[in-house]
Image (cartoon, rainbow, N blue to C red):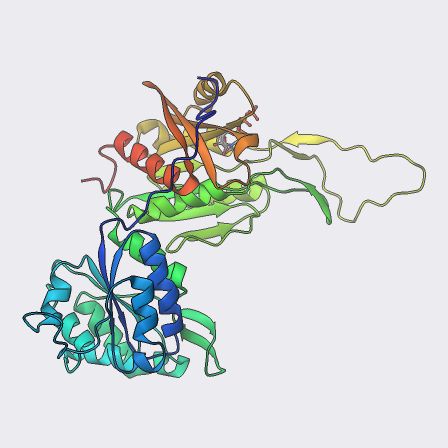
Length: 422
Ligand code: CTP
């Protein structure tokens, strides 16, 4: 094959919550406005969303809005007669895959921590089959309320009882103060839920990913770099995290948000990247090098801006080769003994299979992932060609997130027996 996925249409993005039944609980807080967006995002991902609201929540957003967005009648009272047996707290939880309360107010956290059940939402949190139906809580409150020992005590108790208390965001608050306690954004909560419900084949494993371009300075204001956007590497870091791995992402200069739960180390040049990888590699079981590392850097970087001198003479630039980070890691003792599994990437412009095969040999890695660089730089989709000792496997054109998940599954299949694998 000459070009992975050439001529094929984009495979429609998989819905990450297809078939999942989610109870979305709203307690009272200004962050209820984000719950509308969250509900929409969950439905878009294929979930069936059953909204349950406290009286306090209905002061901030109407049940009509939430019904329109979820496409389901909203429940607000344990005395609701729409359920034939009059037991909404039982019926709404038995088929659920998860309960997500967003926003979870300070008062609501206190209630659930104490096992109180004087209204439908806290009642159904208590009545859920706890082994089967996880409870995720997205706190939202003023920073003083969040920092108060009573709230922190309740959070600790809730975690000890098995609930998942999500992080809070930091920043401007509706009250005009600034600090910790904002509810996470709708897309972040949706990602948290997708990640929480995803299978965890990489649980206990540690994955190190490099991503993005490097920037090699010519002088303080100029440099050479390349068109890598970092999107594929970031998607891989996210997919590895979703699959349960502890992930470190060494990123060249890119403007991409850090995938939730991923430890990010920002670097600029190839040598910075080499140092960051060297510092983290001993703790990794899998190394995935997606970065488009500059092959050369200017032999000397001028300390001051190079100025035109008016003579019409152009400056002479001399280059020196950068370290090959992947090849160095692949030659290490741990990689050669199989304790560390190395995956390389090849961005080519033509003859993908031949170049990918040759590069796999040259880099000394068990798995080399080829793609056509110019067709994918900056795009949200891609097509991959996996080359290993057994041959070549094509992952047809799809979103980078989807391909990243498939690649992680392929790496999981090829790494039996590494630490943490059951
Ligand atoms: N790589 C690296 N350090 C470098 C160059 C490349 O770690 N200095 C890694 C990349 O992250 C990628 C793989 O090696 O996983 C292939 O990189 P690529 O630049 O495509 O290969 P090169 O060896 O530079 O070959 P060429 O530029 O001739 O295609």
